[in-house]
Amino acid sequence: MSFEVIFLGTGTSGGVPMIACDCDVCRSEDTKDKRLRTAVLIRSEQTSICIDAGPDFRRQMLDNQVKALDAILITHGHRDHVGGIDDIRPFNFLQGKVIDIFCDQYAEQMIKEQYSYAFKDTEYDYAPKMKFSIIGDKKFTINELEITPIQVMHYKLPVTAFRIGDFTYITDAKTIADSEVEKIKGTKTLVVNALRHREHNAHFTIEEALAFVAKINPEKAYFIHMSHHFGKHEAVQPTLPSHVHIAYDGLKIYID
Image (cartoon, rainbow, N blue to C red; front, top):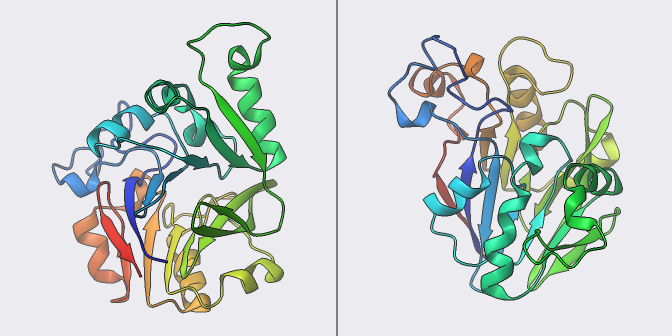
């Protein structure tokens, strides 16, 4: 099972640069320091799926020339991860079908609250059309891709991480139960959130992310969901172990 992973966005909820901020990171001219809200595209020969569809979804689809979409995996219902769902409409029109949304029951409820107009009993043709499949703790498949859901905790909110083959994607994690860590072990490519150095009650710090990488011991790890307090790419990357990389928007990796 081989596929391509495109990092559509690697920033935290406010993105980088932050509105009205004049810090060195926000003023950086390095394109690797400019971060849309976190999401990835997973694309194989048969299948194209996104993990999350935040407020930058439209731009991310255009920037990466995404022409087809089979499904969206939702990690959780916060706005920075579902705020672009209305922009599935072109895929509805062009593909002539609804978009499958895979998420837990909490995310389904939050999406239906945010997009209540899409679920009203009317014949309005221009609302986004989606079909929910509720994720439990069992593996599921989208075409040829077998996906293992993994529960992590974003303070008190359950968030779904996903493992596809030897690739695991985790965002907005602060704690992970031992039973869920067992599902991650053996991962060769690990993507994990690393917000900043300073403590946060709902996100891994850089140090916590590094400790988690050491625990899993993948061949390669990539940091995502970074704030402007993370630091500049060119300054932080040399301080990390050689197998740990700072992801950036537009980065492509290949999973065999």
